[in-house]
Image 1 (tube, rainbow, N blue to C red):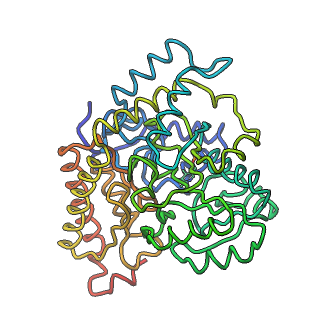
Image 2 (cartoon, protein in one colour; image 1 turned 60 degrees about the horizontal axis):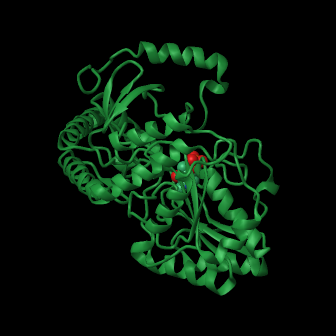
Image 3 (spheres, rainbow, N blue to C red; image 1 turned 45 degrees about the vertical axis):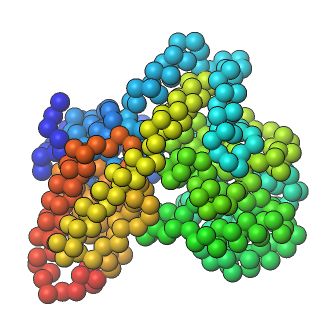
Length: 427
Ligand SMILES: *Cc1c(COP(=O)(O)O)cnc(C)c1O
């Protein structure tokens, strides 16, 4: 195996050749958050393997993984207990004429793990789950309007994709908008919906890509619950990104706020493809009315992986482990930023942090910092929150902090020519 990190200027021959071939047979060469506009400049496109908190790109460069596949990997890559369970199920069968017994086991386990849940349904992606939650809310209430926070990400279907190409205004005609943490704006949007409010869809904290993250105010969460209670609308928690990273249960359990429906996917099976909708009995009727399915929604391997993942998260007290690693990384990076004279914001829960530089509206400094950290072996992102896994060791943290220290030094050096200028004017 190669040494940790890449040498500056290391050629990425394999990656470059794959991109060249992809350009011919994949529209735009790649799409979604992996497209040129989503992947930071200088980052590898193609990844070869992963183990624990380490990953290798197609050229064999090694990194400490602080993106965790953008959320799904929570116990570390190739977690032994999860992969063993997946392989044992695969040896029996995966995609069959009906679900395996493991489906019932997983539903029972989720109902046991997540306080608000009385039932579970399964799908593949987070978008399936958020869309199903809205469909269930509408089926049950007989109403149309769903309120969402302006700028929040809930998936890539026409009703919620951040890029309007190919969508119609009608796709969003039944959405209303509020500002996260602004209860007055949610009340106003609910008032506009009048008798047509089916649900309020909200993420556990504000994690809009490219912006400082904002934890939820308990009054806001409780206020949304009250608004739904008063109107009969469904409170829908989009736990797709945060689920199991903040709390082994719904992410608003520590606040004492129970949603009626919650959407899950990313970390539920440590990288295996599965999504879940969890609901309370008050919305079981709506869930029974709708027709939803998918060719691969009943596959047993990801369900077996999910059972093993939840077992391992419990056994490890994984949330505490991630918090500990995340705190060490945050404290180290904030100390370095101060030492190098940078005014930074390090926001969000420590296991899902995001770093910005003051006044860096175009993410120029963040992009330079991330690229410099990457070439020193820390895989972070300048415009998306990072993810810490429970596999992150003391060695991994030391390597990350060596990389970020080097990155701060490199950005400071690059800014040398701007000495005397106010950093906040740099963009
Ligand atoms: C990723 C994400 C989704 C969509 O999940 P997919 O699996 O990509 O369809 C929805 N909501 C949030 C908060 C997410 O982070």
